[in-house]
Amino acid sequence: MAMAALRREGRRFLLSSNPSPVVARSAIFSEESSAALGVRGVSTQVVRNRMKSVRNIQKITKAMKMVAASKLRAVQVRTENSRGLWQPFTALLGDAPSVDVKKNVIITISSDKGLCGGINSTSVKISKSLFKVTSGPEKETKYVVLGEKGKVQLMRDSKNHIEMTISELQKNPLNFTQVSVLADDILKNVEYDALRIVYNKFQSVVQFLPTINTILSPEIVERESEAGGKLGDLDSYEIEGGETKAEILQNLAEFQFSCVLFNAALENACSELGARMSAMDSSSRNAGEMLDRLTLTYNRTRQASITTELIEIISGASALEG
Image (tube, rainbow, N blue to C red; front, side, top):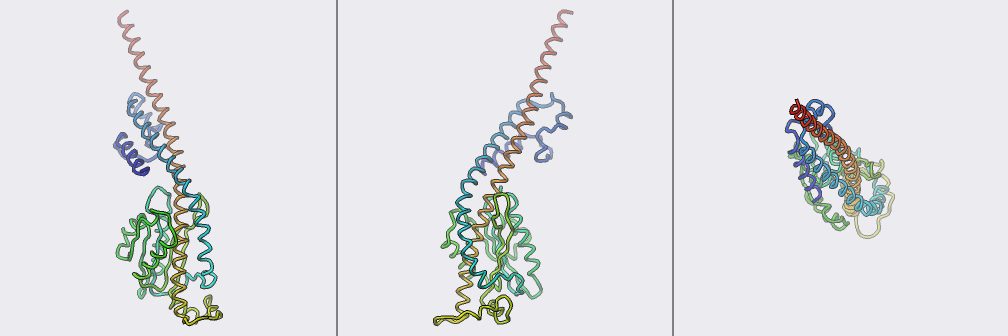
């Protein structure tokens, strides 16, 4: 609702403006344009309409900032609690982004709504860079996109490489069951040697960190374990029960993916709300500055109109007396 109202006010503001191309913040009666047109060339009614539109936009941006702030705290607590889910897997299996594999799947997590700064552009940019690094003559790289904004940006030049798209993930509060079903759906529909999850890790309200987590398939984990290196310590663990090592690695990989995806979705949602708070705060301040300039222009225009009328009355009286 708030975003629709903001777009509506923005369109009304643009329609009441000069139809010539304008620059966002300097278009509202800058000092130069006022001097060029002269104060008489500006209608007080036009200025009042623009002031009304800017004031309405400022109310909407302030409301959106308050809504984001009210949601942020609850999501932040859940995000901090979810970090303990995937950390044991990192200690056991490691996070090996440099492992060379043939089939890569890049899972890009973005938001469904805009007006949240550059978090979506950052995720898409990192994903494209990762795509170039993991592509090759004998390699296959595909995208799985979570969020409408990431989908729109990647569809422009990577449409043929998108395997799955998922929207409205954050329409309702995220829970682990929901994300587990989503993770199982992804694993059933894509073939992979490595899953690379790209998201924005929440640092603070004004800071987020683009992050990549890598999850290897059970076959690659077993191969790397036999070759030694970071995953070579797996052989030091004793396996109990009737399950084989391959079955245990399969179960671990599926559960690890669910845990990492759950944390990544929450981290990105938290970063989105923090970025929206900052963006709406900046927009509110910009609207206040615009109102100050418009008020000054309106007062000058009104004063010029009054002065003109007084001059005309005095001139008329002098003519009658003469």
